[in-house]
Length: 327
Ligand SMILES: NC(=O)c1ccc[n+]([C@@H]2O[C@H](COP(=O)([O-])OP(=O)(O)OC[C@H]3O[C@@H](n4cnc5c(N)ncnc54)[C@H](OP(=O)(O)O)[C@@H]3O)[C@@H](O)[C@H]2O)c1
Image 1 (cartoon, rainbow, N blue to C red):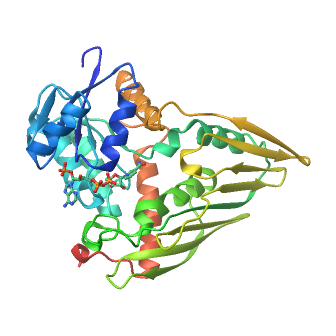
Image 2: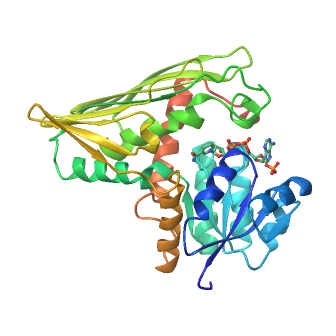
């Protein structure tokens, strides 16, 4: 690898557009190539974001020798197959969340990373958000005492969207849980670990897409109340409270710009604005790991991705959230 880490992006949709803007803010990053299923789209994207190389197929980007790391930004259903394909071509991979649609897929991805001795990380960007990192430190050092209660949600109205698009189409693993419910589940897992018991319930749209899921995670001395939905919006605030205090993360907590800590009847507001939208931090984590020869991140490890998808699998099983391709 040269002085710059040369990135390739595949799947030129919404998130690819946001990601590439943050990539431009990272000094050591070079956006080297983009690939779409459609060459005209790839060329338009490369022109707009000054990317030197555009490909009309994902395979060509995997075969491009100069690309060091591939960012997979396709619908969930293609994450596993394309990540493995990229790694089999010797590429390091940052793969959008959820890493795979179920535990079996994630296991295969991790095995492929190990086989090829390449870096693999799920793009769980909130893990690297400065506020979330700080909150994790505060909780781990006992600043608010032993945690007793956590509330986090993620909801917006999406039923006016195209039912063939990835958000609402079960054939593309659409539904609120894997798309946005993953964030509240992540926060509970990050701060409280794996729950002892999960209680959950889902509602479905007529096309079979899961559009609302409520979850209670039970821990020995704590309970987390979590929610995701496409049927209405929520404020998307998070509240994390322990015996000595409470941390409030204002809405949209998953891309937080600060938090408030309440202790002894006093509230202190801390501002932690992100550089760019916040993808900047996960990109830097990839670079740090690569420069140290690490094949996974200690902050969001392969085991963390496996644990997260295992929890999501459990919620899906409890509510019959099955995708057509899973049979
Ligand atoms: N971290 C975050 O903040 C965040 C936010 C949004 C989404 N995401 C994740 O990023 C992934 C992509 O989400 P998105 O909102 O960017 O989706 P999107 O706008 O639909 O874009 C997905 C892209 O994937 C490619 N693709 C390949 N096969 C496809 C197929 N069968 N149907 C549709 N598109 C296909 C297309 O690119 P080409 O036409 O160029 O091949 C498409 O533009 C999802 O897994 C999602 O969970 C993450």
